[in-house]
Image 1 (cartoon, rainbow, N blue to C red):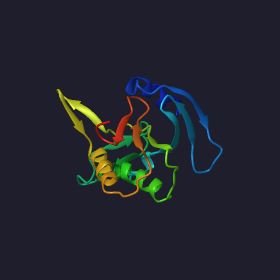
Image 2 (image 1 turned 90 degrees about the horizontal axis):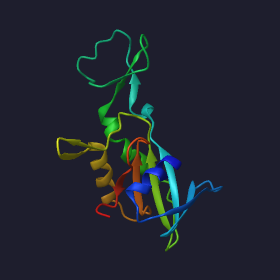
Image 3 (image 1 turned 45 degrees about the vertical axis):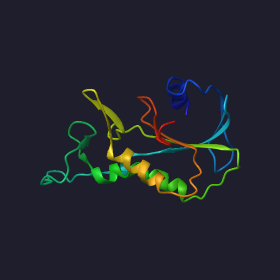
Length: 171
């Protein structure tokens, strides 16, 4: 959470976070005191085991997989399932939605999704053109089709680059 908040200083200079407190409740993770008022934060992690699997040693994949993670020399490779990777953000959001959280009328609730995986890329530049991943587009499409979505903002961070705002768009 501290890493996310550091990046937020440059991403959202209009909101000053005055404090961040871990909440004792089972349903919420953090309470931010900000210049915009209190913000309740749900924090969830995307892990590689959700979209990788161990490749059998010596087995030819016949072009099934194009990306691999290698732990170290001589160890087995882990194949990246691109379809599962591209659906990972939606699954993380869906898991939180299925918990049927509620919020007060004036309460602000954020969902922050983080990952340490280098295989979860959401935005990048090719030349001067900004590109968005299938995962990011799918997450935005999923949220756009929901009714009664309680999260005021949804963010993704890989803890290395600036957080990407998934929802809402244009704010």
